Image 1 (cartoon, rainbow, N blue to C red):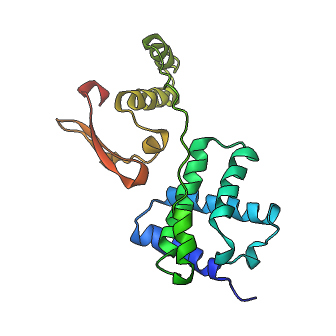
Image 2 (image 1 turned 90 degrees about the horizontal axis):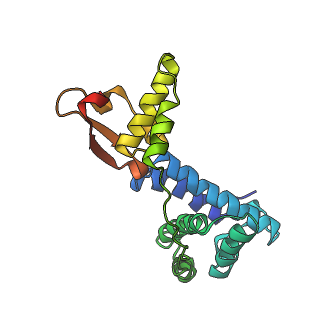
Length: 200
């Protein structure tokens, strides 16, 4: 069976354009892949079009809007998840408009789909007592629990995410004054965080 135009362009987008030209992280590429897997599931379940038959000209603005509504209603996803799916789709069609001029008009219609406004909820913080109680939980006599305490304290003191801590290497730590920690976060953005002497 001959590959479809969608198969060719999407493969190039995910395997060459995102990691190569855009320098997207591995995790971002995986998130984009998940979006298209969901879109293919939607096309098969709702539109009864199998992935091996799906062509670019079958994906319209109306289809994408319907898909986004399906993501929210059938999969019980939040508005922010819906908007993340839209961002991945927009990125692909922004790329595609330069690769497939025959579908330029539909690409631009898809790019015009607005993000949905999400209700902003107040961020809940732990009280000082709650933080103190959390940091008292690990048993300091146990080696593994001392490690856990160090991780918790580092996350609290520096505002790092779990994945950022997991990605740390010994070389990220400057062990001479001024003490710092080099952290690579989302989108491969690097920041340098100062550390107190007692954190070393």
